[in-house]
Amino acid sequence: MSIRILQKLVVAGAVLLAFTAGSMAQEQSTAQSSVAATSPAGTGSTADHEKFPILQREFTSGPEVTAACLTCHTEADDQMMHSIHFKWEFDNERTGQHLGKSVVVNSFCGNVAGNEPRCTSCHAGYGWDDMSTPPPRQSTVGTGWDETLPRPTPASKQSNAVDCLACHDRSGQYTKAATLAGHPPLNPLAKGLKTITGAKAWAVDLKRSAQSVGMPGRDNCGNCHFYGGGGDNVKHGDLSSVLYNPTKEVDVHMAMDGLNFTCSTCHVTDKHEWAGSRYNTMATDPHGTGKPGELRTTATCQSCHSDRPHPVSGIMTGLRGMTLNDHTSKVACQTCHIPEFARGGVATKTLWDWSTAGQLDNGKIIKRHEYTQSDGKELHTYLSTKGDFEWGENVVPYYSWFNGKTEYTLPETTIDPTQSVEINHIYGSADDPDSRIWPFKRMVGRQAYDSGNNKLAYSHVWGPESDTAFWTNFDWGKAIEAGMKAAGSEYSGEFGFVDTHMYWPITHMVAPATDALDCQSCHAKDGRLEELTGFYMPGRDPFSYVGMLGMLMVVGTFIGVIGHALLRKFVKKDGGASHE
View 1: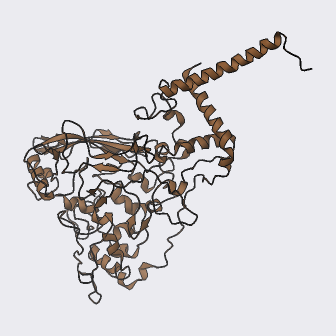
View 2: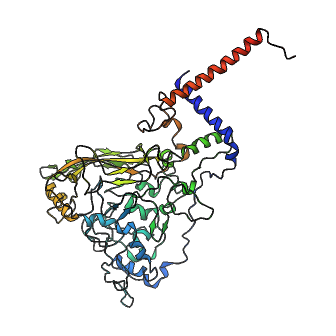
């Protein structure tokens, strides 16, 4: 009898035993079966903003529109200014670290400090051009304001520097310029100006945008989050332009012919604070769906589907459902239901080597495009400004135990340059009840560090009018010195390049249930979890102590059954008593 057959017998026996012993309890269970919220029909709004007199004028700046919004939405600016979208800061109580986009260094563009007009183009405000100071409360109002109306001022304790339209424009034509610290492109357009998505800039009609406002759609969130790291799907791997209008095969929740979710269907908000953050991930949700009618405040799978999501009615369906539900105490939903990321035709960047940047061809910038993604677009594999890249589509995730705690290697952290530096360390283990097996994008990089102090370095890369910006002079020495100065970080004057890697939780692009991983994807010697240690897995570890014991029990049982049958046969043949 083969080892595989014996393993199947062990699993089948265990499942049958569990079913027999627990069927009555399961029938009384209130477990839900694939429960999902539906997207509400219509806007649900009781106001037509086109009819508001204060919005029936030509606006000459984004802050003017915000000032008009605040005449009704009096508390929105204060709420927004306390959010991570505006502050770009987060204090992690589990690690004691002060984090946020304004602070951390990543494996992509590196850092914001020193590159503000470019990096703050996606800031949810206007005019933040210096990371050494908090984002501004006030910004240029422009020339279109009605002077008979009060404008937000420091004295009024209101801020017009919050960008309401970035999240609430529903005209589809509002955007931010790529290099104007959060301001939209307006007439007259500067030559060569682009938007935050890399498209050629157009002049935004602010009046049209202001009159169109509503709840955020996928485009509002995606215009920034889909293009993080300098391009479409570069950073996250599971957030790309495909999600503007995905098929069910790419994302069952966002497909327009399916549930048609927006981002905020899951990422619920209260006072402009959104649920769900990579700095504070909920690896598991013991609260689940809560009581009927209870407010949902988390962006977890369990908050809609519960922690017993698979149906348990019927014999065969029930056996399968019970087995799968038993996995939820150890395996994140995303692990099985997002079999690959970067699906739908848009690749994600998997490696970025800054150390090779700066090569020129007779003084001219080199651009090589040697990767063609599924939608036919050619992607750069080398740029003089950024170095070498690798890309991937339909990428199998990296799997790890994860309890939601993440600790970052900050610029003040001492590193070992002889080892690959973990930009963010993810915590979790097989014996931790709060840990689950999670899928991640593992981004590989090579980036600058201060070789005198053994710490990661800030670098100044963007600045067309600066002689210290790397993209202008291709001088790493000047670029790093300027970046460290902008960040207020001590610099030894010596630099090198170090290998790094970074983890990004995968939680979007949920596939249809029919495309979820099957048992053999993991329960096999060469399965997806082959490298994950610290626990026994049937099918993967046949020669472990537990596996050998299980096989001995099955073989012993088999021999006992056969022996008993033979014994009865021969005893009866040799003159056993008659029952007649």
